[in-house]
Length: 136
Image 1 (cartoon, rainbow, N blue to C red):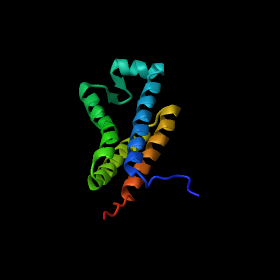
Image 2 (cartoon, rainbow, N blue to C red; image 1 turned 120 degrees about the vertical axis):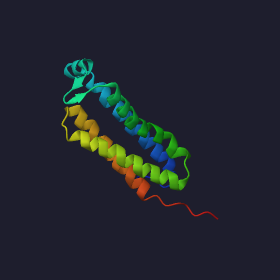
Image 3 (cartoon, one colour; image 1 turned 90 degrees about the vertical axis):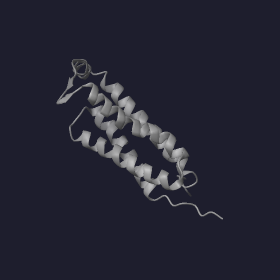
Image 4 (cartoon, one colour; image 1 turned 45 degrees about the horizontal axis):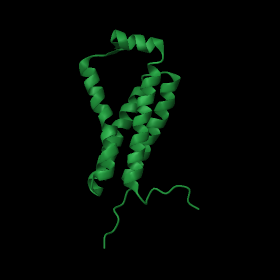
């Protein structure tokens, strides 16, 4: 008896996982803004050792665009491009998230990060093990 079926439409599953990952990123950031010390730090423009500048926010926007664009690309790219894009994007986003965890954080941040890292690793696994279907 199978519990999970992901080989039938891996494009669809990868897209759904990128949606799940993106929503986790968003909710984690929203939760953080509910803590007054972080909201005050953001408003002051300095969170720990990170200075919140226009350039920092631009870099952050570029990194956050990766999972959002992968929602669409996972559905429309050809097999080879899709496979490699998911491996590369999964590696980048998972590495960034794993690095930020080493800086410490709140309980909710660590909780969301667990799911974000696990999802990124699962995306990489699905892409690496993806085999192209034989055509007749």
